[in-house]
Length: 342
Image (cartoon, rainbow, N blue to C red; front, side, top):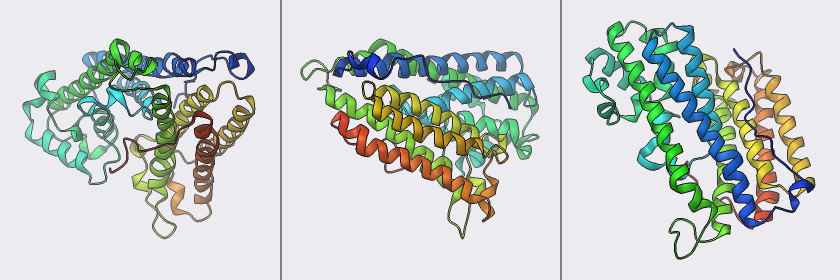
């Protein structure tokens, strides 16, 4: 598997940023150096993947696999930004319907393949399909699960891969366009009279802080917590993207993305940044130590699961720093997020 690409932009931190650490400057930094680059990369990689699928839609194609992996990486790096344009028309869920606690995707996918549902024939029609058969996890079944290798016909599987890839690209492009055309300005320039979304800088800062804590919750409770289950009942088959061997990779990508966001939120506070860097470094070391267990199969071994639990504790420690240091420094609390109630 290829190395993980760096997601953090080149940014100024510490005393060098102190002079520009005002309310508007903080939001500008996060939007210009984190949100927009993250969604730009997602739009670019999904578009490239859709183009590859048009040329080569064979599930066994290494070129298709590579393009899907790059696009999936870009989504994971954006998966904590669960507000604004990603929520419109359930775009985030259409891109990545996970966790799938009721196994809706394999059931719906099997039905689609066996019935050769014509919903794949046009992008407009496919956009009306269930989110359970759209997005990256549907593609993981098609590319990596042998149970789906011969379902339906080769021609239909090809059409489905092309439909999903095009849908991914369309959703990613729509999210980026909304950010560029409207939402970035609404976030960067709150106004009680003219801006119905955000009235004050404090409301904006709460949204950005919530993105950080949401990402940490996804990491601790879902990407690590789901396969860990309990000591008496571990759940290795609940690990994200285990069929493609990407479970650990997703944790590492999200750690990198959250480190970037945390640095931006704490610009001008070198002591807090140093504390955060130490906490993220510790998590990175523990994640790297799991390179021999990329799908967290070790959760079933009492002698091995402690390594995954140690990484989960690292994430909890980072979240504690966020709650006790970053939030108060911004004058905000985490509040509810897009995952609450799921």
